[in-house]
View (cartoon, helix red, strand yellow):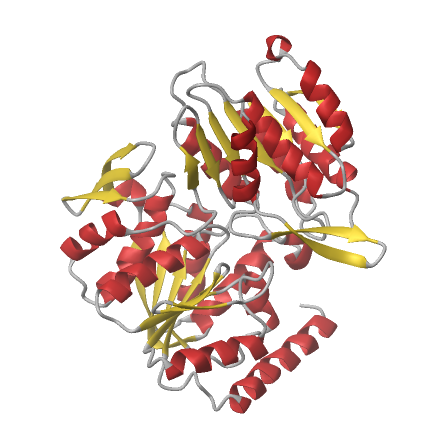
Length: 449
């Protein structure tokens, strides 16, 4: 870590401690479960919350989609995984007033690297996976993984580390580093490849067997079995009976924008949050299995954010070009970057996978003109379209076009925004967050068919 970043981290650590002090050190007498990883953090956190709450434990959760205890929600801000320390300890104080005993805290690599928690201690550290992401900040995968590993260093003595044997790189990194540092922790390992049998996905749920018991998890996306396993390993630390988790798998409700099904028939429409290469690949592989027939299409709408890791743009384009029959490139918070340039890198990635660029559209007016004269008869087997207008029209039109193209048995998925309620664009007044929800755009497009 460079000296300036190191000093800033020290400042933030003690700033967090100061905010905790101002709120009366509300973290005292509360136990914390940290959840980190490249993808699956929010879903795993909510699964843990669902199990613990229904097992009679007074628990709260602070995650990307907000903070929740009982039926009360606390807003955590825009595009935020882990709140700033000032807001974090205010939320913890509110939860303490609700008599919460445990808090599940989704922990981003930035928050861990920047010291946003102060000297907060955890009882459990849950890892979903560690892939390539946020290298604009961390520089290398190793430094990124080291930032994630800080969560283990923040465990109390004999705290529990729960991590994924199937994610080979992170598994070896965590295992070897714990051994090398001689950390006194309890290790709990989960593996879908070794512990789960007879996986049977459909359009509404995931059936599988774990420990000889039949589960029917009320969500889609095979990778959510990994997330449920991580949550189950937490429940086992609480001695919660496995037959209860079987019942709770059926009653689990997916959070907004995570494999959220908007329509089942005549074609499937899903809103998802995949915004890095690993999550996008898992998402597209899972939903491609939901096409009604081999000739049915997978139509993927996505973009890549500005002021974020630029390398993932090409890679995400490659992935969509490989798995999607139609790739529709659009805005995902370009901020002060040029949307056309961002989309160009994604298109280059898609073309490297054999997809063919059909059309780039610069404005809503051009889209309306093109749509009236468009015919699917001449489409290549892997087609790419790009919506380049630097406004909410880009994503609104992209989603409208995806719904327009969809036919019986197809799957349409929008990626990257999920639960979020705004799109960030540059304006003469600076970067502005404009109101926008994928769910609303999808429903508008469906109403126009």
